[in-house]
Image (cartoon, rainbow, N blue to C red; front, side):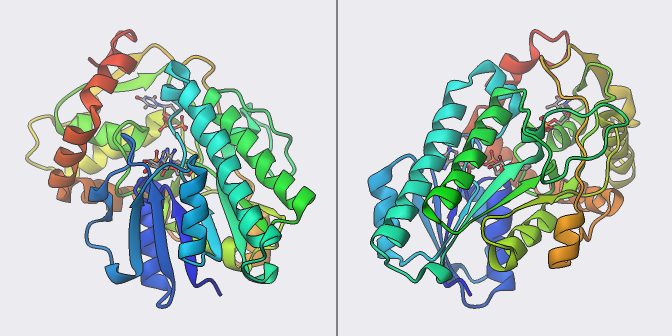
Amino acid sequence: MPKNVLVTGGAGFIGSNFVRYLLAHDQQVKIINLDALTYAGSLANLADLPDPARHTFVKGDICDRALVDGLLREHNIDTIVHFAAESHVDRSILGPGQFVQTNIVGTFTLLDAARQAWLVEKLLPVDQVRFHHVSTDEVFGSLEKDDPAFSETTPYSPRSPYSASKAASDHLARAYYHTYGLPVSITNCSNNYGPYQFPEKLVPLMILNALNGKPLPIYGDGQQVRDWLYVEDHCDAIWQVATRGEVGETYNIGGGNQPPNLEVVDTICDILDELAANSPHKPHRQLKQYVTDRPGHDRRYAMDIRKIESELGWQPRQTLSTGMLKTVQWYLDHADWLAEIRQDSDLTGWMERNYSNRGGEK
Ligand code: NAD
Ligand code: TYD
């Protein structure tokens, strides 16, 4: 079993949930958390960790080869769980260069450092190491209404700079397995939601705007479909694959919840009506506002998760209603976290850049 795990991007949304999950579920493992603390990463996401003595935070860039080489040796790393990425489609449309750098060059740097340490210098037995690469369903492209869900063998067809850069990183990870025999596994997961998600993504953005009585910007007709998964279920699936999944294999992960965006927003509004009963902005649905669509907006994603279910016995625990209730409650309880994130990350500047030309939220 893994002893020393390098988590990249562990101060971001899913990475910080994963650090918390792993410290709680495994009593032995030590975590080295490498994160550059971009706008999307924050030490506020790592407050109140269970057993923090087993967690070491390192501020740094995954593209820094000397730093990565040093960490693999200093901490005798046997497992890498790689989350670090630029992750927001809208930002990739306005500035694709950083996506190429972090998602492609960064993943290459980590893979090559792992190859050097584990396969060339043989610092650890090869059957005791693993490089787990965390990826997205967006690499498969966009489904029409009645198309079957994406499976592990669906051809890649990425359509945004974000998904194209993630697709490239998946190809590199697979190439390092086939060419060099690096023990790689890959998961492709659908849209996550839950605690500590940066409020540029649909779910936390809608919660935050609704609480402040601001318009809820719905791109296009709001009928785009995502396959929503509660973040802790994703963390569990990643750890199952990293520790029990076949080397060289890919596993699809999804939540089996596939409502159109409009329904997601309505659900959030209805939960807020209940939980924030004294809100002056009730009913929150009145804040919805249709705005200019995202260019190249993927219409529908859906994941076929039969492989991970049958091989590893993993299934999501939360439904959309239980997961969304927990999520909205978490945001209501963490106004201090929201205030800190807002201050650190120039969220206001992003809102201006992304929404001012859509005829919606300023
Ligand atoms: P996020 O944007 O919330 O966090 C990314 C983290 O990576 C941040 O802490 C950031 O500081 C760090 N980072 C960025 N560039 C870095 C660099 N060069 N070096 C070191 N650290 C760097 O992202 P997320 O939503 O938590 O996504 C994590 C991973 O999961 C990504 O690889 C993403 O593609 C994948 N994924 C996300 C979703 C989703 O719904 N959010 C779904 C499927 C897969
Ligand atoms: P997002 O959370 O950005 O995730 P992704 O683009 O990776 O799926 O968006 C989820 C869906 O919500 C997507 O179809 C775009 C839509 N959306 C809006 O309608 N309005 C918004 O303000 C945002 C951020 C997203």
